Image (cartoon, one colour):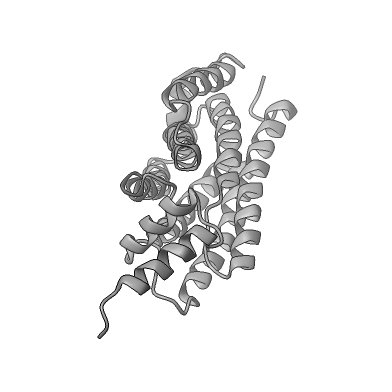
Length: 250
């Protein structure tokens, strides 16, 4: 097989289609709510896209993309676990699905042809390779930050820093992908930039206090109440009303 094998081009494009679908769903729900959200569908599409793109990166001997997808896959599955635990009190431990998907993706990509792993160092000039790794660190770091907030809330949270890291990492990865001539990665990063900028715009237009990390106590309370971001429930309304009735007069 070669780098231009139609099968692997199709796998790479399918991965980007899954990543695009996650942001289309996220974008649609955010526009409807007039605020930036990360629904549970986002994470399922992320797992699918990451599994396929990890296999594609292994086939391409692209260490920059493979590194980011490997770490991202674990974070996506952990977020699904947090959402399910918040919703029903229990969930499948995320480690075993992570290891299984990592092993399957890497095996499929690495065994697809006999090009040595050392070919990863010759895909582009050293400077662009460094830029690619920096971009991947930022791009993957957005989910590390997101997971930090989520672990504190014990539910899937959406800090504003996620979108800033997405933009900076995406720009660097786009430059790296252009240097390698990888159309699959170029298409994915180009579409992502539009979505990241729109989410920042939605956050800036919010009239209420920021609920994306800075006003963290309020976000934790909402996430624990709903299990995920959504419309206020009757129980939440009753609790608020009860608190107001018990409050001493001023």
